[in-house]
Image 1 (cartoon, helix red, strand yellow):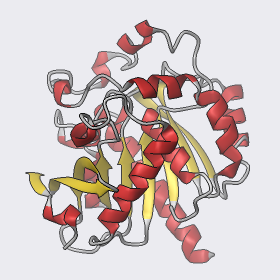
Image 2 (cartoon, helix red, strand yellow; image 1 turned 90 degrees about the horizontal axis):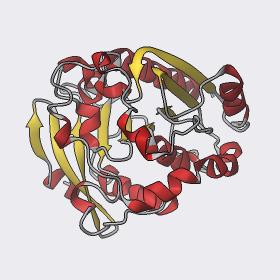
Image 3 (cartoon, helix red, strand yellow; image 1 turned 45 degrees about the horizontal axis):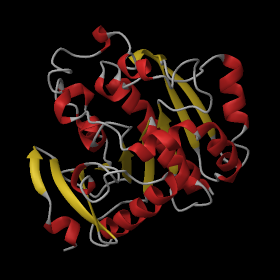
Image 4 (tube, helix red, strand yellow; image 1 turned 180 degrees about the horizontal axis):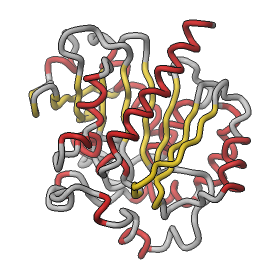
Length: 287
């Protein structure tokens, strides 16, 4: 039994709280696994700025949980509180840079995989700042099977980095189940200062990383995405920059705001992301 297994505890049926050792840094998170079989593969889910692993297990309605949807389709999901959140918040009050987070997450994933069945391998699924981290992890690394990114592009929308943008990034409130915002206290927190620095530099960072990604990539954008440019020209440029990716996908999610995985569109989005991962598994089998 790995240390990650030993420190897990039941949260809701099929979902456990878990802690992994990331080279001396304690990372908390949530884990779900299929009940009756080994997982087809494992999804490493990475939340956005000011969020937590609970973003992927929304409690306002059963349909919005990635962890529940994925296990029904045979996948395990490890949703980690990124460095600077959860158990590591006190040790890392300013957070870590993207490069440092990538190393910490790798160490935590190594601790997890040492004693847990992961199936065919690990997929990355990142939202917003977690999407930036997922793409950083995917750079120059073909051990991951593929990556799906939501709520993250490469060109910010006008005024999106101004402070007022934080008040409008959810989109229309009716896109979310009743009770979403009453429960948001367990999910939403202030982002560490280092993330604000890295967020401002992201367009240049992505330009430096993009053609070094050698695994399948899919970008998903909400219909009411207000952080990023999502016009046709910007998205065509985004996909074109991923020159080394063997498969490049792009989808728009109707009836969704930036925080797709907490809204009514969550089930449709999660199912489509897992369908993309199924295609990646078929590609691997045929190679």
